[in-house]
Figure 1 (cartoon, protein in one colour):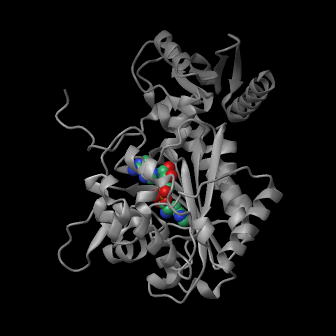
Figure 2 (cartoon, rainbow, N blue to C red):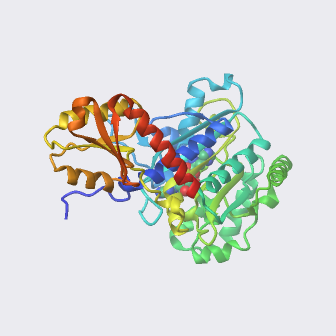
Figure 3 (cartoon, helix red, strand yellow):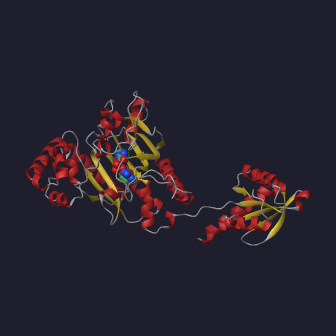
Length: 433
Ligand code: HAM
């Protein structure tokens, strides 16, 4: 047993997983480019007040799961449990209200929640996040739901389902919450003891509980979609018209309330069919028209989503998709040599080839040529560049490790030769697929 392990709820992403992660990041970056969501990076920690005010002090994420940092007394900070509050803080701080609205932003990064670790739930995890700030909708709402859905489609996840709700605004939600509180009060005896305190503090959270007793109770609970004020109802209807126009399928889920207090109106989550528990959401988002004000700015509508990338990889694995573990590409060439001790020449030639843009490794061990060639084949290299007696005349041997053929190539034309061979190889592989 090693003396130390990664902290509970965290995981190392090892080289074999690298290509799968790089692929998700590349797809996210490409979608962000196509949809016009500009990159932003905010700090991994923020003033704790941003999360307390923005996400809500009574939420699980702030009350139980915040990684509060022990600072030396000046700025009370916490690791970010999500990125929306930090992005809206940046929007206000950098005067983005004066930019062309909405400001569309996108980021990928680590989030931290001190939660009980279990499958698909980590203390450090990664999200792809997209936000559009400064547009009240409804069309932009549909743009974001569709972008969220498109990510799953492009990574190769099938059988993904969207659940949609509207959770009202400050005009209609308080009345609904009062009604819901009264509903739970009348049935307090049926509510598990640990949850009773929520009747007063955050009755909305009881709505999407997975506890059996509450699930039974909730079947009769008043539904917010039936209590929306006229403007919220109109907004929701228009979001649905736009989603229908895009051909996005979704289920209406009146109990979907999301776990953060900043949400208003449109809210959604995505699940893999058959894995629809709240803990298994592949991503979700919603509108947060009051968040900028909570953070001290003037009223500014906003909407966005975040996708849990660990959960996407787990879902690809569950689906036995080849994209869960794409192979690591081998180098185009490995430079090997007849003189095991001449590492300097092998390193120099590899360096020149890399400078020409090729992926090349030099065998820097002092093994016999035969062993070096075996190593090159094991790495999945297409070519071995063999440094031998030919070097005196400015040549090397290039062996095509797949075809088993070999030819003498002048050093001056080596990069071109390998680049051409690689291109043909890739083309050939692509044609076979
Ligand atoms: P969220 O629903 O809290 O929303 O998280 C979004 C996604 O992050 C979840 O659906 C899930 O896939 C993933 N996730 C959350 N917690 C964990 C965890 N402990 N381990 C692994 N994955 C996890 C937000 O974070 C909002 N900021 C989304 C948003 C953006 N709303 C508006 N804009």
